[in-house]
Amino acid sequence: MTKRRYTGVAIAADPNDPYKMRTLEQLLMLFDGGDFMAEIMSGHQKLMQDLLEHNAEHGAKGCTGTMTLQLNYSVGNQGDVGMGATVNFKAPKKPASSAGAYINDAGELTLYSPMMKRMHQPVRDISDHDPITGEVRDIDG
Image (cartoon, rainbow, N blue to C red; front, side, top):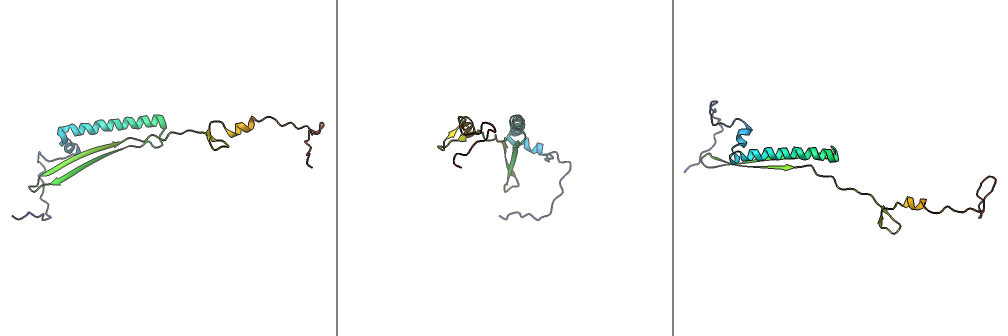
């Protein structure tokens, strides 16, 4: 049995063919009796809601999402075409949680600022000062 070879000559399609797929919507409605198209639309709606929620909670930075539609085709010996379709949605990622703390002199995390620690030290008593000018006298000098 010899195999048919594609000659490269395109045969003109009948413009009045009632079975011809004319739009992507018609093609997508073939899968799962139209349920796949409903899955696409509900997933798309959820993605839009996720984008709105992310924008309200975290602002526009990183507010991106994707919808990936993949159609697979395989041609059989008789010219029949097997088709498969998948759709994936990717909602925006939530930003990483953030917090702030300080490192103390022992190298441990603390909520107490080292600057506050310095501010709460008692005031130095300077007994050797000039009472008229307020100048501090250097004891060592």
